[in-house]
Image 1 (tube, rainbow over the protein chains, first blue to last red):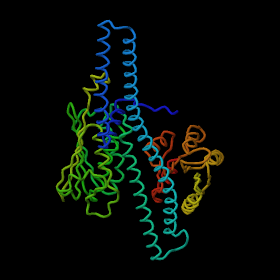
Image 2 (cartoon, each protein chain N blue to C red; image 1 turned 90 degrees about the vertical axis):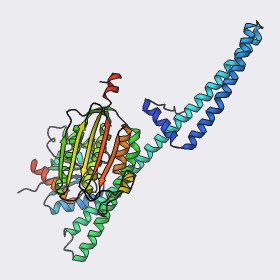
Image 3 (cartoon, rainbow over the protein chains, first blue to last red; image 1 turned 60 degrees about the vertical axis):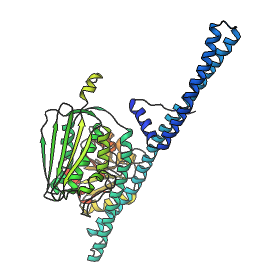
Image 4 (cartoon, helix red, strand yellow; image 1 turned 180 degrees about the horizontal axis):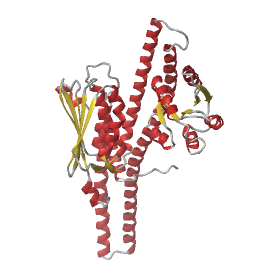
Length: 336
Length: 124
């Protein structure tokens, strides 16, 4: 029989409780179950305990004492079995959900892999045609080929966004906490996008106003959050525009601001900017399913931080991440 | 001047054909292989100027082929472009850990791909 794996850390317990908490019906069921069992158990022990003590102190014969002890022990075992059964069901529910999510993600990866390879064939083939490797093509043929190339690019973008959705599921499941240098993360990610910003002729300014930016967090996830904000800035800043980054810190927090000179976000849409699939750019050339900011927000929330936005339409938009450094908590726990 | 030789290892025959056509049009001599073992054998025998290596290969996967070549004094200087449709960050990280010089996702931009090949061959 398969052994059900229990929680291995405090995070796992949090995941179990939060998983159950996502469904209000589960909460109600658990509440009623507890409300039903606990009073019954209390009543049972009061009656048995009272009888047991009564007979013990009044000197009743051993048979009655024995029966009382037997009933008490049986009651205890029954209660123990009921509670353990409930806990095991809760944990197996969470493990099952986790396993199902992992299987779904693996399936998605396999499917997208099998789709991307033929797309690579189509894309290369069309480029070969356009470059005259099968003979000279006329204007109409070239236009048709370009339309097909555009469709391949759109399909590729869609698949990449599907993969981002599956990554969003993984965000909460694989949190690895370590002491990291946030300044290094910012510099690495700025380097990653430098090719694209040069190509778009976008100017990137980076101000580091902090001597120390170390904090406790998941390095890969925070790198992703920073990259998502930078990618968003690159996407929505016009060619020749400006992207400013400001990194600062105090004893308790690290703050990172990304300011871009894009079209801005209308005030009535600001609250929804972090919703999945929301995009508010008038530019129809901007591809993507609009998940980057939502994922960044999930990651920041996972670190008990804040991600906020302010915008002046037609002028600039600023995204601010504030993350707790957690240094004092870690020191008390002997991790620093 | 001798043509530069590229070993292209991929189990997808259509992709082998399309990319080979493009590389030959650019003046390269192309050697192909359809699985990891064949790729490894041809790399050791032919000593190409560059290797383009798919990740998900039959017999031996691309990571292992890359690691075996990069940790061998005789072949470690051959640049390797790792080439895959897998898109997880950990796959790319592993690719660099086993010594790949470039990690490209499918489908790729052909001009960028050719530019990278040229860059790596010139560095060699």
